[in-house]
Image 1 (spheres, rainbow, N blue to C red):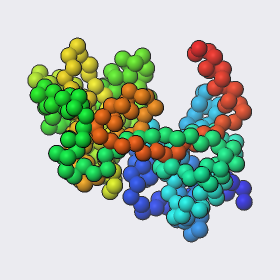
Image 2: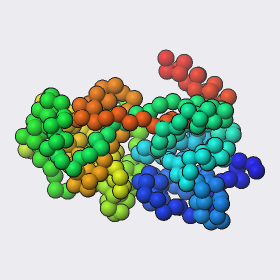
Image 3: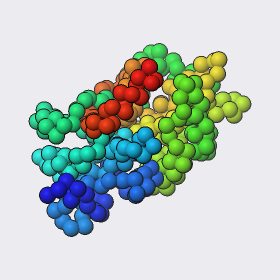
Image 4: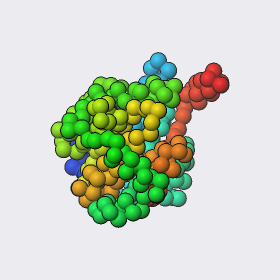
Length: 309
């Protein structure tokens, strides 16, 4: 069977993983920009496997990279059995470049199978608090310096009764601008996802303001039946440290405690962010990242690096 024959028009499976919900993908990735792969054991159903991917255009549309949509931690895949993983790998179009996070860590056998398919495998990390139900116990595991920051935030800031996507977008743009970067999150996607998550009772916007009602931090926390994710946030920076970043994450942990969920800070390759997350007493969890580049994409990436350097 040609690999492209395994691109099937499936019904989205009834599973709990947040990032594999159809409504999530409707918010972050139009159907025309998706590739849905599966092992079609039952016509019109997800069968034994399900793998939605985003087709991201690069270099003026010259190349299409299979990736995750904006603000999506991973794209699965969902498998009824991990032994089917190599069969699902065979569904990937051979000519496409890809850059994907998986929702789990591959074992040694699966890593070999991926490499045999010409795919590089690396390790990503996130930090989680597995049991948030006892907030006093959770707070006791937070490092003293971080405890002081949370208390400082409680003295200086208060929760706004109503937060909206515009607050989040504005602070995202401000945060990235301080880094000399443009926000990678399209405003339309942020608005759509905030609305969809709250409509499906799977998300909450949290905003913190100072005594003058200046919004100092805003974040979107989303959840399924297992985890609450600190998905995205932004901060207003002043000359005075008011503890906004620490208190915002603590409010997310409070949401996880309220719902009896694991709290997931989401991963980052930036060491300072990893230290910040671990300072809450969070433990490291790993997942696998897949990358494969066509010859043409490799050359363009090299040229791009040279031009930037």
